Amino acid sequence: MVYLFLQEGFEEIEAMAPIDILRRAGADLKVVGENGLTVTGSHGITVKADLEPGDVSFSDMDMMILPGGPGTPNHEKSSIVQDALRFCAENEKFIGAICAAPSVLGHMGLLRGRNAVCFPGYEKELEGAAVLFDPVCVSGKIITARGAGVSVDFALALVSVLYGEEKSLEIRKKIQCI
Image (cartoon, rainbow, N blue to C red):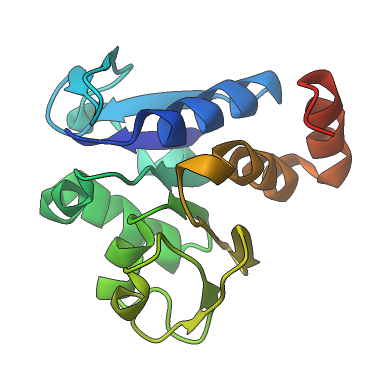
């Protein structure tokens, strides 16, 4: 199971691209509204989540994803996000974070000794990481990306770590991203 967590003020494309592309790959992906089923993004787009925080089951979690955007600090206030991050780190599950969201991982110490990328200006928040400037970075079980403009590449990297490079390339071709 893949869980994508939405906070008020999320960057819409950073959520929608992974949802769409991972579902194309066959992922069982559920969107979790951190404060309820209705969540509004930074550009006024309202999304209906699949689950509320109490519906998340760590026992079947393979990956969690955090989109960024102006609402990123809300991830740090969310107990379900904090618990899920700890679970993923302790159980070697994948964590994807894009834009400002890698800062949440940095503040928790999850980036120590890893490579990571983020939205420009958040580099100092990636505590303990070797900060790169690639569009997307895979470092062990943590996948980070710079921002909205690389949302599709981020999503394809998530597919690659879960289902292999061949599946990622297949989807890349189908969506004319070659």
